[in-house]
Length: 318
Image (cartoon, rainbow, N blue to C red; front, side, top):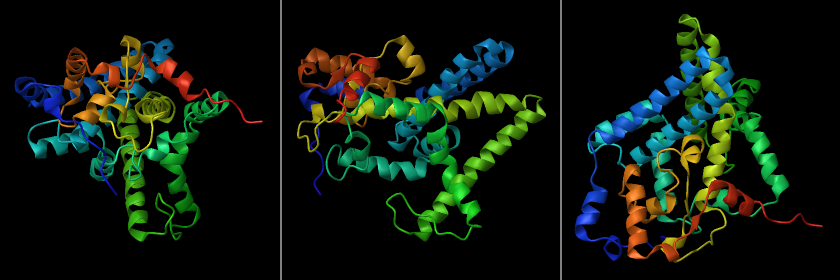
């Protein structure tokens, strides 16, 4: 199984540019994590103070929950902090406890992007789909069905089986180790949310945890995660030999950065081209690539809505 062709930094940047792009910060990643939690806290406060703002708060919080995952993704690459122990501690405890499982999976995605060994290929392969199919997927996300399937269905199944059933791992093979990992993951998720609910209840605002943490996680987060997955690799050729065409960068205005694509996640092509760059350097890398004249060969989209139209442009059969 061959690795995907890679870009060479020296083909696009001089030595000084590359050094500055790759420079890691002892404070910038920590500030972004603090910023993400700060936005969540402010949105919760705004929703609690002015209930009419709760729908907007749900969107903002759901997007920042995605933001925590994006920052954990930087930690998976060792980019959140130059000290690996600090990087992993912050990524695991302040961003997402899935860091340990996510890192080997994600590095395989980078090694084989858009090739047969890419574990994310199944996310992009079905596109384009019909408009009706996309709307059904969006409804499943916004109605909580996706959340239930991903977060609760396995736990409910184990309870129904009296904890004696043999769950199946993601590829459908009975595997006791995978079952134990799934049980531990589900247990951490359930325990963490029960603790959060208890803390908010003790402060007299139990409903805030349900409405301004779990509701965004169950509705807006699955939808923006789906949009992100579509934007990054859908409609791209499999076994693509050109590194400039193995991922997509999507232009994002202020409202898209606030409600869909936080922390420069829209610069996904730049991330795939040069995985040593922290997320806060990706916009600069994009500008340098354009100045170099590489933009003509890059896969880009003018925005998320035009891209979703293309991704749902297949005509119904029959």
